[in-house]
Image (cartoon, rainbow, N blue to C red; front, top):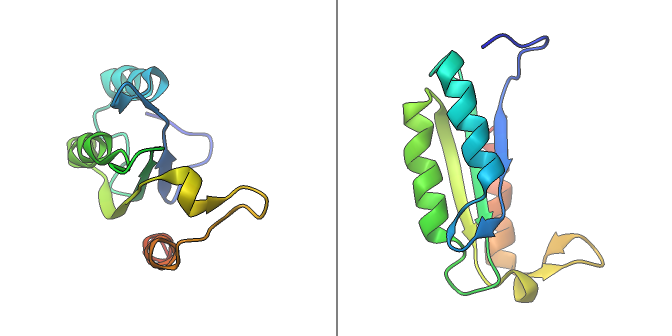
Length: 112
């Protein structure tokens, strides 16, 4: 895969559709991997998942986590955020659950 500018790190957020990754995420990796399996090119990767339910899209996140190694990514962190509406303040665009917010900060700092 050839980039005009090469990314230094990757963060992926994907909505959950019927407990699966959305089709855009799947298609991106399906088609790009036909050109070059090393999509991430050994770059750092952080994966985040959330859902309105208590499961926090953990099943989807586990699928995405297992795919990072297949695409030669350096997984730095992954985080599942359950019960999104209860844990996120959309007026202030921030997590209101302090434990989850701390985990998010740690995950994102792992890219530095």
